[in-house]
Image 1 (cartoon, one colour):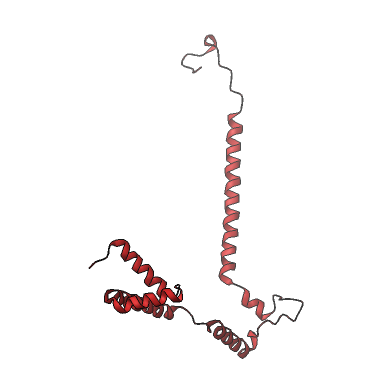
Image 2: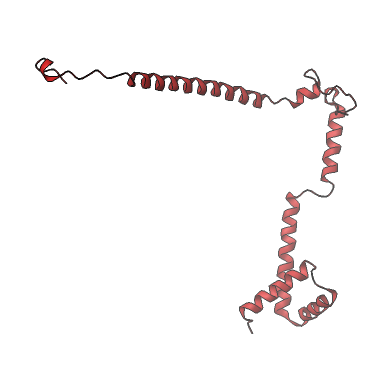
Length: 163
């Protein structure tokens, strides 16, 4: 016997609550009893359980474990302590990093420096073009503001001359 659509949604919500452990102990016991007597519900629960397990397994491949941060920090410390110029900055020196320190050189980004240089050059070129355009506009306005010549009366015009 097929359940109405709303009943299916309720069953799915019950399965979700069961798998996410959001049921009270009494609700959990009632649901497990219902699963024992209803093969269709048992199949749905098994399917949902397998789906959750597959998703957790897939996420396990890409999600770092609880000890991920500790492993990374241990690896960083072992690498920096094994190389003379890569000693970790301990912060005991009050003078801070200078340009001569090996640690400061690690912080330099040559690509960022090139990009900054390129952007500064572009800004200077844009500013020069803007000034040139503003000067051209100002010059053309200055020429256009000149007083027009007075029209020559018709009696004083030469034949074929424009007014």
